[in-house]
Image: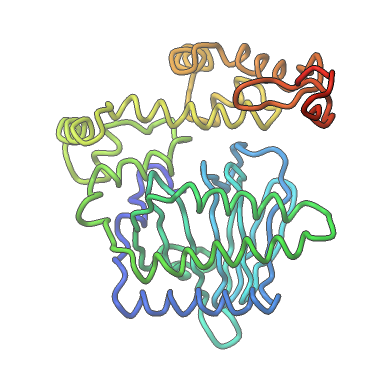
Length: 340
């Protein structure tokens, strides 16, 4: 996450050249070969309290994927740390706060490949060591991904399966990783970069909101300054392209984060408000109710009630009926038994 007032590297990084794209294809090809031979090490944090605002850490509403090419990345999470080495893959689930410190290898500079997800778009970039220990985007490309839900489902399932135990765990993980890496490999070869054409300032504004939603100073004025245009122009352009006001979009993204925190953490409503960029918890509660139809307290209570509600009677749900026979076989034709 960029510091308030700083121009995000996302907007100053170069688009990928043909050579960069060829290198990216080779990186995914190598990862696929390693995964096929069970030699691709997978690292996933075991955090249980996502969407928590921590100093020197940031998080995203969707998973991030890191493929270490050269050197190392030391990841820090609220409850654990680990080092990602060369030819290792890290999947960070949505909402997990993390910090990164990078180091070059013995004879090669630091370099990794990072994938992120946006609205119907995925980003893939090479990162380099911009300052001692600090990674930054070197070259980046955005790809239109109508099947983004498939990428997200695979990444989410990889993270879930990694934490499970079972006789087929490793086999399932291998299949998931091959599918996910294969999809990345295909889109890098066949996809067309869109950042400087179709996406433009509207997409950049969306990215910026998702990167800096916890910044209480984030607003139309701040975003317009970073994008080098007037607030009125940006507001009009955003509304024309998305049919949604930019101020409403900022609130909606912040509420998305609040919903994630209410569903997955024990943070208080005030803590969630501050972590989401709201300076006043009371104002946060009003905005939340406008978006979700319930206050944060009531929304959490509804979630808890749904979790604890038990079925009055076990049943099997069919498209046209409910079957309460507990799996009993259907009666044979001509028998006196009543049909299910």
